[in-house]
Length: 300
Image (cartoon, rainbow, N blue to C red; front, side, top):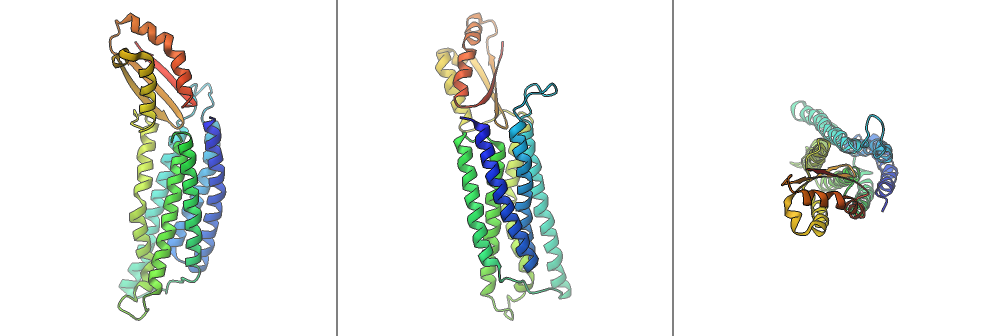
C-alpha cells in the first residue's frame, strides 16, 4: 500500500473541493454582508491554501537530505499546528468583529437587517459538499490505518466547515419565523453575532485537539494510538514469544513515519541481544506490511 499516494489523492480532492466551497462562501458573503458567511468562506479558503502546501509536504516529507538524513516528516505535524492556529485565530477575529456590530446595535441602535435570501440554498449545498469531503478524507485515512496527520487535520476541518454552514442555515431558518416587530425582532439586526458566537463555541474544540495532537507528534512524544500501538506489540510478541516481556517498547509517530525504540531491560542478556539483532530484518518486513515508513532502534 502506497500511503503517500493515498494521502496525495485525498489532498488533491480536498484542494478542489475547498476552493469551490470557499469561493461560493465569499460570493454569498459579498451579496448578503453576513459575517458568519465570511467565517464560512474564509475558513474554506484557508483550507484551500493549506492543502496546496500539504500536497508539497506530502510529496517531500519522506525525502532524505544532508540536513535531514531521517527525512522531513516533522513538516506534517507542523502543518497541523499552523493550520489549527490559523483556524483558531479566524474564529476569534470573526467573533470580535460581529461583537462590535452587536454592541453598536444595543448601545446606539445602529444596525442593518440581515439579508437572508440566498443563504438557505447556499448552506444546504455547502453542508452536502463539506460533509461529503469530510467523510471522503476520513475513509482515505482509515485506508492507511489513520497514519496521516495531514488528512486527519483536513477531515476535521471539513466537518467544522460543514457544521458552520449547517449552523448558519438553521439560524436563518429560525430567523425567518420571527416577525421583525416582535419582542425577538432585535435578532434581525444582531443575528450575525449570535450565529457566530454559537458556531465558535461549537467549533473551537476540533482545531484545539488537532493542535494538541500535532504538537505531541512534532515534539516526538510517545503515542497511545488505538491501532498502531496494539498492531506493533502483536508483531513483537509473535517473534519474541516469552521474552517479549523483557522488552520495553516505545512508539513514536511523526506524520506517516513510525519510529519504534526498543529497550532490552536486562542489558547483560546476550542471548536476547543476539536474538534482537537476528530478528530486526524480519520485524522490519512485518511492520512494513502495515506501515510504509518505519524505523526500529534497539537499545542494549
